[in-house]
Image (tube, rainbow, N blue to C red; front, side, top):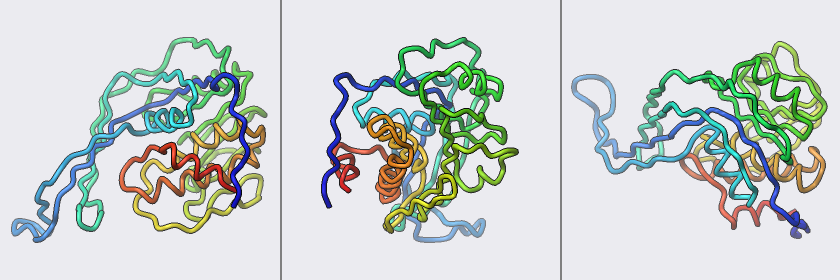
Length: 257
């Protein structure tokens, strides 16, 4: 394997990230017995970890690529609590708590960015109208990850969806990258396979894919060339438990051909 010769830009890429974010809370413990009151395990608590989730995870992974990111997100709190058996890394239960989000209303300046990234978990922060308004005004590449059924169809928009989201679309534009889990991704009916790895946790892998896809597109100028690197980034993420942020060492490994 040889390292990809990437020449960093003279100035870091400037990216506008818009999306709904949350806190991922992981409550770990050891399960050794069943609850006598109900057929569920009893977990003896060991520790708690808090990590940025949803669009905030995209933000952290974009920063790992040494780009400048202007991040616009909700001020209301969304908390996703996962109870995990520490011995077997088995998720027992997830509890979601969130306030009602105030929709993004402001007209944003979209000038001066190398790319716009929209991480839309459809929690109410980005309306369908706002999504289309943003993409209509953008002149730079736009990378969208959304759970909406209706998506923009514009030449400079690349839309990243998983298989379920793709099947739920009302209409599928040309520029859709469909992630296929351990099978990699599909773009314009061309498969982009991913290396086989041991999967520990898929949480946040799509966020990692989106961040890497954006960065390598800006470096290489081709979505076809960027997808394999995005596959490698998400493959690294799933080998770790919980929401994962790429390290400098990870990024060097991704750059290897």
